[in-house]
Image (cartoon, rainbow, N blue to C red; front, side, top):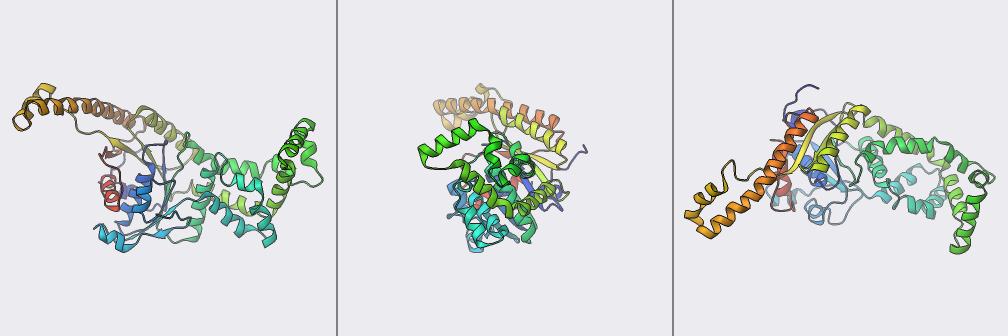
Length: 372
């Protein structure tokens, strides 16, 4: 892999989609918002799709009421914090159920078919509570934004998952389902689904219906048959986003922290991206401890501070710096290992901050580190 410049703006030149990928809890949502801000500060029209933003970050982005559609960040809000970029910053928080409802509404052949799907209890469960639905919702929204809007760049924050790879495999998994035998069985007329599932499974469904009053097998059959009018269109969208993730205009940024598990996940994700033929344009290491004893002994630091702070406070401060020094050395070791294992000589480093990001000025500060 060729050596790359640390300049993030150059790395992302010509990219239309930028996906922030990484383990949960490493600051992907804040990083995605800051990345979008940094691109808008360079004159581009940018949309950021956030996943479950913290309340303060949502408020900073003007998303006090979470919206399932992109909204432009108020220019007055930006100007009031002294960070008005020359480009446009748009933001939205992913609403998975609304995303699927919109797709069903667009693809249904008529109103009756649409209502039959939207009111089906199986659909309500699938569109809100099933594992993996956030990942599928994210790629579905990505397809829509790319196909129907004129953004220069779309920045996508991927769902907080124990396995970040779920996002990459969501389109293929859905295509396998749409084109698989199981769906064809449910779409077939004449009760074939019940015979296919077998007597034992049919008995379970019968007992479930008697206890709950819900004919689950019937609901499933009705649901899948009602889907027949939208399956082709939905499959086309999923194939489109699967191709989009491999296009030259799509870039993946791996976001991690210096802790052991997220860093290990970052290396694994990089390997999977390479195997899948998806372009990786860098790594971002969040929450890095930069300042400790800076090579001095605790006693030397204490002596330097005594004149100004007094003996007791100087000793406490020096000991506190010694605690941080342990983290500093850990983070340096982790970054050195990531440079080697990711073949990434210049990862973007964002220092550990004492406060949460809660306004646009804070996002601008993070963007400054990303684009340094």
